[in-house]
Amino acid sequence: MLKGHQSWIFENRPSILSTGTVGGPFEAKGKIPEAFDILHEDMWINQDSWEKAQQKMLEEAIQTTLKKGRIEKENVEFLIAGDLINQMTPTSFAASTSSIPFLGTFSACATSMESLALAASIINAKGANYILCAASSHNAATEKQFRYPTEYGGQKPPTSQWTVTGAGCALVAQNGNGPSITSATIGKVTDMGMTDPFNMGGAMAIAAADTIEAHFRDMQIDPSYYDLIITGDLGHVGREVSLDLLHDRNIPIDADKYVDCGIAIYREDQPVLAGGSGAACSAIVTYGHFLQEVMKGNLKRILVAATGSLHSTLSIQQKDPIPCIAHAVSIEARGEHI
Amino acid sequence: MGDKKKQKLQPNQQRYQAFQQKREIKRPIFKNCIKAFLIGGLICLIGQLISTFYIYQFNFTEKTAGNPTVATLIFITMLLTGFGIYDRIAQFAGAGSAVPVTGFGNAVISSAIEYRSEGFILGVGSNMLKLAGPVIVYGVFSAFIVAIIKTILTQWGGF
Amino acid sequence: MIFFWAFVVGGLICVIGQIMFDVFKLSPAHTLSILVIAGAVLDGVGLYEPLIDFAGAGATVPITSFGNSLVHGAMQEAEKHGLIGVVTGMFEVTSAGISAAIIFGVIGAIIFRPKG
Image (cartoon, rainbow over all chains, first blue to last red; front, side):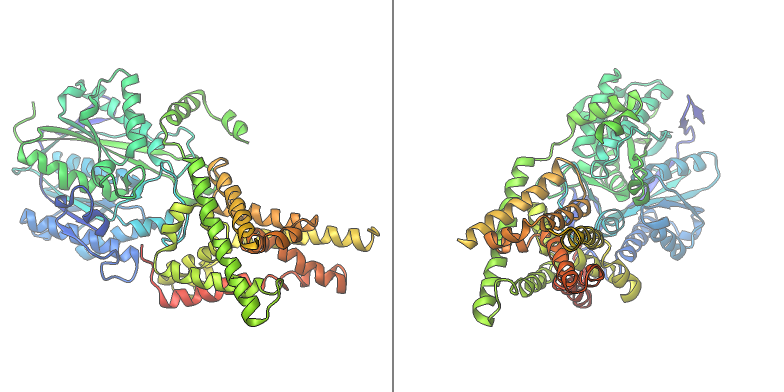
């Protein structure tokens, strides 16, 4: 149900029944290898293009989720998913092999939470029994499309981020024993005139702060309600900027309770500069890591605000600023909600 | 240019950019320049060694040794690019590996290798000069202007 | 001694490139294009040849030499054939860099796969 200006409360408590996460070799060496159901040793995953490799990972994530949830794909009403590659063909091909009715979503790296919020909303309104939502990205495919050929020697500044190779998927159901999705806040697109595509964290920080602020205002709660507030892929620069922005706006978030998926996924000694990014980043870290913590009982309530920068190579070349967005979804352990 | 760009920004955008800039991780300019100097110098030194080798072994002159030297450097670049080493050197060296002809070679070869998955004509052929194209285009055009001016001055100006 | 100056001059040209990257926030394509134009202009005013005599590969290996040799090729032909030579002689001296890059690019595409 609508609450405030831009938030939904899901009073029927849609539940996350199961999840599936897939990663590449670089992620395997990261901080949270245990978050992945499948880890590949090869960036190509036996395919003949980066884009097909991404499609393959998404298919595997979907299959794993179905297997873990013990649900046949025929019983799943909808697949809601998206990615960053040209008109998101990897997702469309994966949707075609899974042959589940498909809704494509695009919010760049915030696609994961846009999909989850929409799935929860449809389930809450009894528009479906089971919905799969997923996001995927591939480091080399993204480099090729948005930056330079992977073997090109371009020096990246310390503000740039490393696109995650992987896919994350979650199965949302009417009921079940998994954590419940209790509310969601849909973000507005922000434009602060930032034009540097090598500093997306700095551009997206305001979107994260806006959405998190809107969530607390709409829900009439304060940050202490959550055990952890998780941002999508702000990296070191964006995390600091957004935290300071929130403090400036008198939203007292404890720095220890404000974490970022882009920082959580890799070790500090990996050459990722400001941190991880990519559509798969928030999907994998949320579904594979933080959700497991909720299920283990280590966390009771979390708010995930995935962030995305919505530029294209064309808009950057035409000197347009980078539009950014963030969507927040609140996930709570069973029986924890008010 | 920077000021002109800033004037078009709304006050809240300007405030945000200043806020953001304070927290941005700064580029280590001095350190980057030292690294660029060392690696760039090293590549030129290797070029000088190759060219000296051609002069003494194959009777090239100082002037004519330039071409085989460039070709040899680009051949080495192909191997380094193909084995995935050049981009690692470049993250360390910055302009030190981008400004020498090896950087030009790397731009062409990395594009050629990357777009292999789109086929040899539309992939490799069309995209090979995607990054290096501007260098050729503006090299040729500026050389045209310079040479025209020089020719007119020497032939008709009586210099 | 030529080895020393090759190192120093080559290194310094790269430092100029690095400053264009980091201080002026130019992309590699912008930086290299400007350096090539600078090389052409320097040769136009007769400064690049002395630099090559002084620093050897320190001046011929950086991309600036590309602008220099384009002007050289154009001027050689212009002396023989007048203004039309400016157009026809352009690649006379420079072909090595471009043809080597294209040839090794195609060979590279045949034998290598990007590592990612």
